[in-house]
Length: 408
Image (cartoon, rainbow, N blue to C red):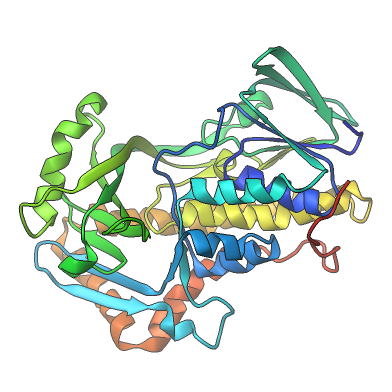
């Protein structure tokens, strides 16, 4: 390990893509993950159009599209009345480079990025390593880990914590995770059912205070494709009996007596939280380790990717002596500001609309705004451009461009 090594904890998309960006800039990277392989459980799977330029810069866009698919349509459907409001990203054509969203399970993106990372001499991935503690001094940072063969200490110049909402990195450096946890439980399911044949778009936001759901196609595999069906239930209900209640949610929505095939499911609590700082000395936080939001609207992974794009570039510039450490303070301040001021309220509003529209007056007001999207291209364009506002421009203009095949 060299003095300029960057340690990364967490091999989800944010951790792996940071590693890939740094390694392709010639920075030595050591990536540690407590699991033995990429986690396969149902997680984020929609990449807004605004993050696709970054995937292209990192060299993984084409492989990601080949593994998933691109789409443009959105539907809001009111369960009790059957009203449907449709609009799409067609209004962005000719105005942005990628006028579509990408659908792909986040574990698939991590696997793709890992394949690219394996081609670089400047990166090593260590599976089965759980972080125990973080120590740092003026010049270095050390990750204390428990590996398959016992305790391990890894020392580098910087450490990126990308180890999720329960981040051990964040706790080890004494940062608070400010905010709150929602009283409900989300249940994300991966299912097979012919939604398109039944008239559903590839992304349907089903509005209802009992049966609200996000129904979105993940891929084109099999005869029906794999779909993500995410609904909400009281966290007071026992988690161990989720599968007993699951058929009732499907039966209330699906237009016949057919039962979907459930391939996987994941019940989890939802948060609106941000770390008190995204930097603590030589430790930087990114993705869910830095901020956690409910997934309605797909803003969590979007935020994590925008963290990644600006962080890997800025940190590489600092390691190479092309920028001062103050650029990392700007990263921490700006990414936290965007989450707190933009992502957090937007995600909370999305959740309220889809899952808690029990006030008919407020619902009708929201629907009037949504109906404009179908009738007014300018209104649709303005709404779709919101996810671009979550991006942080480069903090080191003129930084070295990424190049394929760079080695340390």
